Length: 194
Image 1 (cartoon, rainbow, N blue to C red):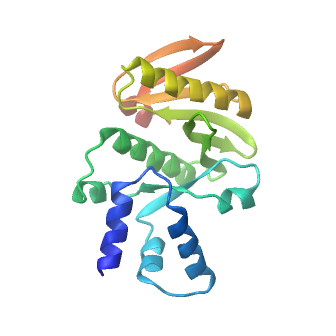
Image 2: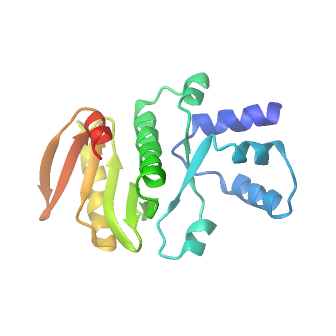
């Protein structure tokens, strides 16, 4: 039971991060050989959900290491996670997955990464990227804003998508960068959009 508690605690403290490759490989090996473990039982209860990096090959995407998001935010509270930025990102992840499963099953939710940064969420419909979303609790710091917007612009160029959003706690604006419009929208308002 201590193993399961440690496992849950680790993921609750590091949601929104990548699963360590050694654990991911071990989990896949256990599942491939049908070895029942406490960890496999926990995986199947879907207390967290994985989002994979974007690949236009389903096989490559599944071979990649997922980012984990907690389905029940109570786990984060129980294990003492206080970082509001991670909490907001987790809320967005779960809402995107909810929209996928309940409104549009053909949607795909992934993330994009290059050597300079990442985009938190890439929302695709088939092979067409519909939306690129960054999540930043506090966008007031000019360095943070530049980092988030530059990653969006690089992903926009590579994935050929012009629907760019940054979900914030309370900042709202439409700003233009290099001829592309970036929409900054507060979390509460984005959650109310259909």
